[in-house]
Length: 238
Image (tube, rainbow, N blue to C red; front, side):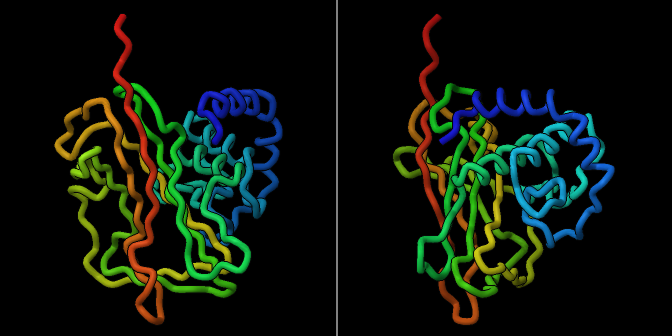
């Protein structure tokens, strides 16, 4: 896995040396409609690369008002274009998202974190990816407006935090169709607090990401999930 420090160094180097290229892309590229380009394709060129991450970071820093394909730049599907989307874009380019094995069918899921070990107060950036491994479009059904959740449990298995806690979702069945080999990504940042907003103590935590739908036409592959362990270290004594 790429280290976050290396990403930051790489990105700022690219930002400093590619400003003219980015400006030219904005002038010469015609934005595609949302849903046509892959998630993370901020410059509308039909692929996802580190250049898209640079554009996203410039939007986040206020250096650009919008990305050429602004809706597609929101790789985390949270309605905001920011550094979390840049992280997901780089993870996609590095091949860290869910991928299909040769001959695999159905869906596959993967959960990644920029860092799995950190100190108290440092947030964990999490990326959940779901890939359709069928060689055709496949539909999943959801019982409400909620598509996914991120769940944190302590080493005793007790629920500590979940992304959907306190959120309201449209109570209506909806369906989403995924293209052949299409990968969809969702990202959140866990700030090391519990569902009451209190900081959690150092220790080992299991994080689970889950797609809460089921695959159609037969109801199967319900609650696709992936898990990782992360560790919060005891801060060093000064």
